[in-house]
Image (cartoon, rainbow, N blue to C red; front, side, top):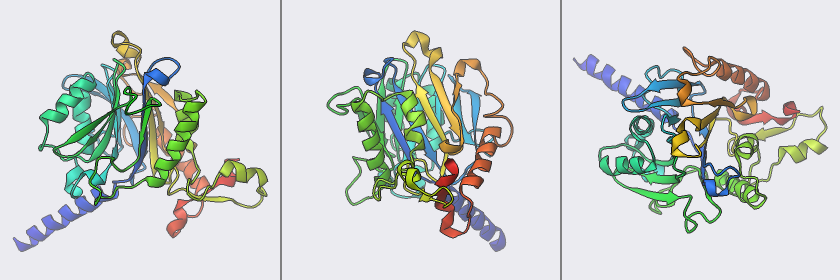
Length: 346
């Protein structure tokens, strides 16, 4: 009996450590349709994780069908990390440890998003779900959501509380967008999240894009998601490569950049123009680090996922991205795993 008990404890610890290892930061944003050229809201997530194997699945849910990014090993799609359903409701999150009290506080971040995709037709439904699930959920996250009615919000959410930030409210988002990384504006001061350097960088990128009327789907996919600048030490690979001797490798440490060593996928949700056209809401997805991938548009109403993004096991596009990463990160010893050879991007 003692041996069996020890085995159970060991397995539990292994599972706990495996879960802890999967908790990596993300860079996320919601954009109101009031500031986009076509009037449709945008929702963006650069997913950072310890598991580089991702794929997209189509699920016929309890109430609504949906598309979602999951870990390739999650065959039942119990935890989804960003997705959109048949009503044009889309959701993603960034981990915010400062909204929780322990590891157990946020173990349901992904399963809660699956529940939302299955049950919620719009942001109002999601808010109702947050009210009804108080004290019964184990989450600590900045949840970003949009819907076919034009709503675009963040909800800083803990196990028994949440605070709504509306990108359509000029008092909350005077420029029509909200960005987050891995800390909450409403968390107690004695608690600490993460992603402060990335927050500064994405704030500057979005401010500049908004001022120049470039805040768009194209900007997020081509510029923001692939950004390799460290805001604190001002490493700009594009400027450096103009003066760099091409025969000399130029390395960038990508631990604090938006396109990070741990970035495993990107999704940008292009909201529907009206509730009657919810079918036109689009999920643009890149599997793998964005500098090593391409964006593919997906629609829930297609009822399937292209083989290159889905299928059994790991997605082919994810595998190709990993091969390119091996070329860009040639030295896998110790912390050198975090150093990208930017010269090879030329």
